[in-house]
Amino acid sequence: MVDSYDQDTENAIAKARLISAALPYMLRYEGKIVVVKYGGHAMGDAELSKDFARDITMIETSGVRPVVVHGGGPQIGEMLKKLDIESEFRGGLRVTDKRTIHVVEMVLAGSINKEIVMAINAEGGKAVGLSGKDGNMVVAEKMRRTEIDPDSNIEKVIDLGFVGEPKTVNRAVIDMLLGAELIPVIAPVAPGADGETYNVNADTFAGAIAGSLGAARLLFLTDVPGVLDRNGKLIKELTVAEVKALIADGTITGGMIPKVETCIEALDRGVEGVVILNGKTPHCVLLELFTDHGAGTLILP
Ligand SMILES: Nc1ncnc2c1ncn2[C@@H]1O[C@H](COP(=O)(O)OP(=O)(O)O)[C@@H](O)[C@H]1O
Ligand SMILES: CC(=O)N[C@@H](CCC(=O)OP(=O)(O)O)C(=O)O
Image (cartoon, rainbow, N blue to C red; front, side):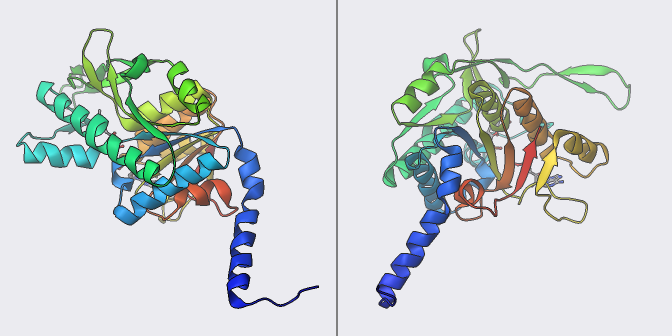
């Protein structure tokens, strides 16, 4: 029996041990759909983008069926600034006029979508970039929003312009791509039945896709470690009831409220678990899916 090895072989064995440790997790997700929402704030430098693309390629190679939905809020903001168009948000949503929707589509379905597709393909994956328009995959409806005017206490309709909510999701397009071992990368731009183009919040879009696919996991890659408690400490696991209590007592505020609300809706629609995690942690997707340690906050029904 050989019981001692040279250093190179020792290193190779250590690597093989690491890979084999992931096997039980790979089997857990084999054949399952995992939707990954890649937020604009989570898109870091070239190294992090490469890690993300590698993770997506790696999970696909191990039998997971990944679907990427991306955002790009900060990148849209930069382009609008270059074009001297002002950005305005209400309740976390971008007020989107005719000029803005052109820029939103150009940045999301154009440059960002193709950058992600290229990054995955450079790592050996086979990614295909789409928006809600392709095959009428996601059809949206103009969002109707109301706000209570603090002075008069009267409810007022807020017009956000071309901001939409997903009305229907046609999963056949996604199923066809997954069946052909392709990785769909989807931009949250959708057509309306009225012939207009709508800007859909990327979290909402990812929730609708994951719900329609009955995904095993929906991962939200953002720029915080997950849901934090009052002391700023990461909460590793939450139930829907606990999330509602954290909103009610003011622990969850701002942009995290629509995010966790989307999580709750996705769980209601049959997604098995949703995770909010820091997209700036290297290999966060592999950490979450293929290790015991996990990453971020897991929200279960
Ligand atoms: N309890 C909380 N835990 C973590 N983040 C929170 C919490 N309450 C509010 N937030 C805020 O929510 C933000 C994440 O939401 P958002 O900025 O909309 O993310 P993204 O742009 O990635 O979609 C965090 O940066 C943080 O400022
Ligand atoms: C209606 C609305 O606000 N749409 C978003 C779409 C992009 C997005 O949601 O990107 P992140 O995930 O990076 O925030 C926007 O225009 O910024």
